[in-house]
Amino acid sequence: QVQLVESGGGLVQAGGSLKLSCAASGRTISGRAMGWFRQTPGKEREFVAAIAWTGTMTSYADSVKGRFTISRDNAKNTVYLQMNSLKPEDTAVYYCAADRNMWYSRQEIEYEYWGQGTQVTVSS
Image 1 (cartoon, rainbow, N blue to C red):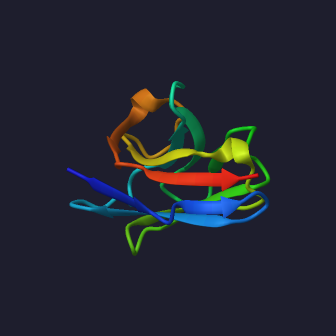
Image 2: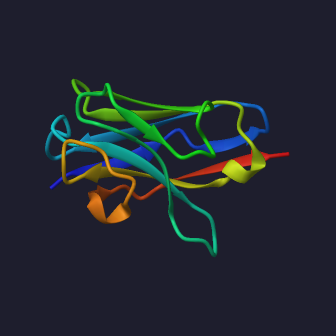
Image 3: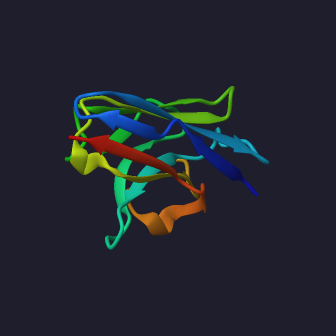
């Protein structure tokens, strides 16, 4: 079992930055790809970013490309999401997830473990 706990969410003005962290416990995540997803009320959860187990391959949703950066520190069993140039439409609950595999996927079904989420609110 892997437990994931997100932190770093909060309220920020448009144009600002936040850095989310996802701390894993229970088992190492070093052999797993990791991802970030987000969800707003009334909408389905959507893919934001993912990183392979090596940390050298990443994937981003078009809506965040160039503004968000996913990274990982396997020694700390932690994954990060640096969010810059935030927009009101980035407001959502952000979830960290651990993939079943080493290579990332953009599909929720491929993710085995999920955190409880952290709220990000961007004011205009």
